[in-house]
Length: 115
Length: 246
Image 1: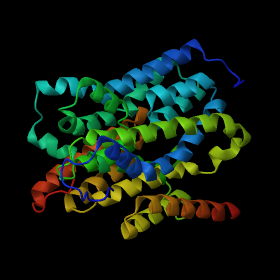
Image 2: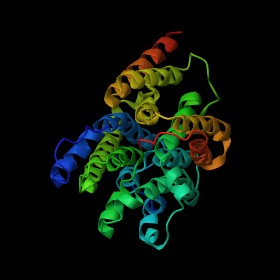
Image 3: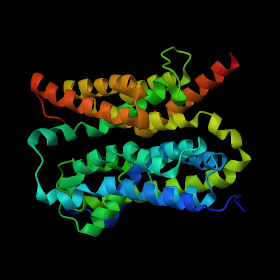
Image 4: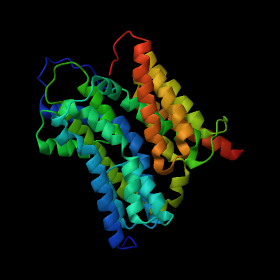
């Protein structure tokens, strides 16, 4: 019904991916009782959420689809990201930021496609 | 992200915390919808079977690594290499679990396993800010669970929709809906930007992510994250002052 049947190598692949991903997310919990983190390390952890997300955002906006660095304003990803920063900074509302910047991005993409 | 709690400490029921977690995750779920649909749509074209595609969303549950795996598969990469790349792409989640250790400390192993399985970028961001609210509410793991369950059901439903209905709109992957991910993440990052060390760490991570973007297996992400964290910690020494909110 959906074309191809699942292949043996796919089962190995999905099982391997599931194991390493769960391992990464879980391993520290059972072993954490055996040591304490240095105070500096714990302070550093507070930077983790914004820093990791920024390191995902910036390349996906400035090098869309794995391409070359595009800092020009004809890059709809850059326009959309700037819109998200402004809307997020002004209204501090997550849903509004996501939806409105998507609209700006799609609008910019449509305009640039027209030439 | 979540409203200040008005009830007295410890009074939230598990169920109300569960739904509060789901509710606070709603914007991130909206942001993940196009991402999941595109994954399901592209998986077919990449030569991934229905079972393997659903299996990834059900058992791996890590969006960006699923996309990387799919594109590697399409370019003929062997599966052990894909598993290795998954390891590198998801290494950042170890930083997430390190952050969660104090919050999960009193939970039993089953709870730890379940919550660790669902430690995605989105649920981590929502849950960690709830855990950090010093309101004395007990049982915030139910809030964490609510966020995780909502993300999980949505991710799998969207993968399924992409796999099935996506066949009718094969060009959907070229609409640029992948912008939903950076849009969501920008919305998460902005509330953190309230101190000089935080600004410095985020700007550093952004610049390094571009410079190190050429490293293989997405290693640039880890390099950029570590650089950002180090700059943040150093800047705390340079600009001593108010305590970080997070």
